[in-house]
Image (cartoon, rainbow, N blue to C red; front, side, top):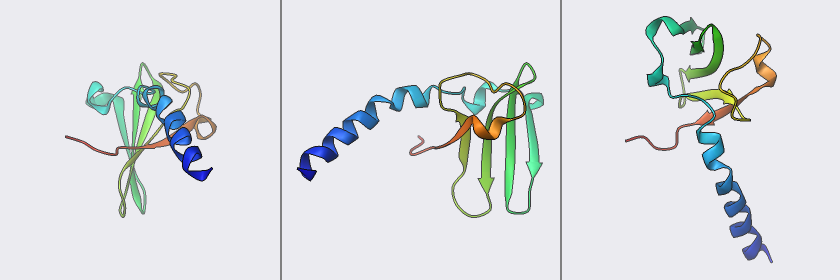
Length: 96
């Protein structure tokens, strides 16, 4: 029974992959004046904005791999400053 549940769960997870990948624009789509750098003790944070609205956050920890905080529901921006409840982590698995 476990051998049939794993492929099924994997297939269901892959169905949502395109939706999650298109949740936010890529960092290359921003001008320098649209990116705010915030240096912390253990990480560097890039806040990406379009038309003054926060669209995603890139977190670069001193240890470990960088990750992005993006809206999960596919929204192109985050309304207001209460972004902690609306953004979810997203990692880059492979780049070329």
